[in-house]
Image: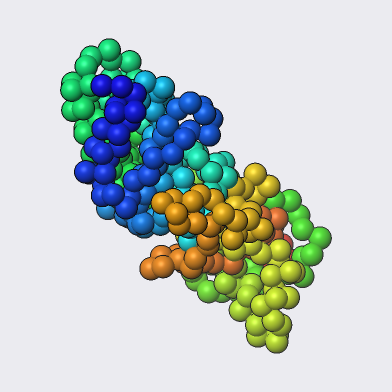
Length: 335
């Protein structure tokens, strides 16, 4: 059996598993004398051990063959052409593809220690006959299909399903107490007054000192809501509130606030939408961004760290300076 026969046999194995319309054979652009098999999934539901799931659309796998036509040249790559807005902003091709991979380009997946590694190693290096390799090609088809449907939390995914739509590099749950005195005290004082009168703040007491007995995430949401209620009661617009308090949009994910805005290194470039990515079996697939179908993301406006830090510092200063003491600071009279 010659090279062309091997290529045809391997391609047929993929077609038998995925279907003729989901498999394409073409020349490898990186290795002109080598062929590669492209596999297509219109939609895949990716799930993890926690029961989380995410639907991804128009997924492709690139399976490069060696020049002999029967061995795998290197491990497969994955690419997508259609993303939801949340996935695009996160650079989410798959949980095990780096978020720095540009949308609509091939990404090298992290395979961890899964069984597919052994199969790939055999298909790359084993000198056995093609009849013996056939079994491993059939196994590879099934393991590749399984791989696309799973986010292994144990393996440490690049992007967890729960954080899609968020830019976790701008995590807003860091300590807000680092803020310094804010010259715009007129914004801090009425918000502190409203929070203290609301009875919703929780405090803890350690070593003769009061601190907030609530998470920074809870404080951030509570403080932003209080500030907005004051602004709204004065007839101000949400646009003015966003500008004056330098608010950013976040999502609440696993108890953490994560910014949804794209950083400079984001893989998402809206100008590329509509660009042709791949021609598969005569059909042109272009880069597309669609709405978040069924994705229940709770988007929130949160004040900037500077205001939150000043507000928290001021509240704790008042509480520690006045509670249980005969002489209190003049600043606390408003309470």
